Image (cartoon, rainbow, N blue to C red):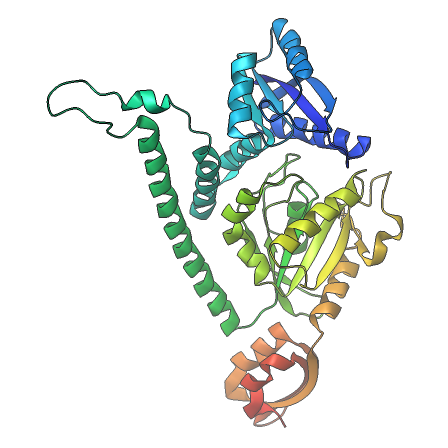
Length: 408
């Protein structure tokens, strides 16, 4: 049975009415994805946050009146609440109170499939819950007054916090092992250097649909936020036969708390190791410019703003588009394939920066080298002689050293 939710939206001074409404609509989709159902919404224009309850006392009373009619199981705030605010609101409203972060974490827990994803979700959840532990405090120090059993002892709250700290330390060690394993896979890939292209973008922009269209992968596609959480890597051939690896990543979202970004840095390491980013944008979304800025902000936080990037304006098959002239990017429809050839051609041009035209003579016995040149470069001509295969190709300058013996 779905939990019935009352959503509370906040308009801050620097937010437009459209941004506040879009954020609240997005919260409704998050609640739906988490398995809840939006029953009603309340909005407040807030200039100053009330330390005790986040919202003003008048709005708290308004929520109480809405709850008095029954049919509401949970109140969800479209901002992150402090532990004290969450506790005070729960006491005042006598109903479960959640914030946006709690809902996102719940979705992450449902979506994680790999060991890495499960570790990251648990780390994020524990980091969030650590400061929200409550207890009777000093009163829990009271112990039975028997001989040998006096003294403050350790409170239940302290025990819980210590256990969570120990578990967080263990999770971080396990994630380090995951990173080492990923690094080994990357080094193997670098042994046969194939460019890595990462799909990034706002959640539900169509990254997984594009991944399937480009690579023939069978990545889950669903009209839900965070439909895919664990990164997926597949191989793709560009029109000239050159191979690249396409990596799908977790979608970004507005108001993504810093500790969530920290917990999921292992996922973003695939982005860090990429040669090119494809920023997938839902061009049919009225808030697409704000969503683009959210992605840019997260990239900046991860120190990835300098990566080569192509803006990919998806869903251009729909009627209403909100980006004029697609601003130097490529317009596509991942659903029907429109624009995918133009995107592949743009990818090839960007990835070819730093290439140098080279003539090679490769012995017939080194057929694996010829195959490798086809995978990582652009072959313009090939001639088979008695002892050698003559190849004219554009190759990455940084990799010319490995073919030095074949260059003429």
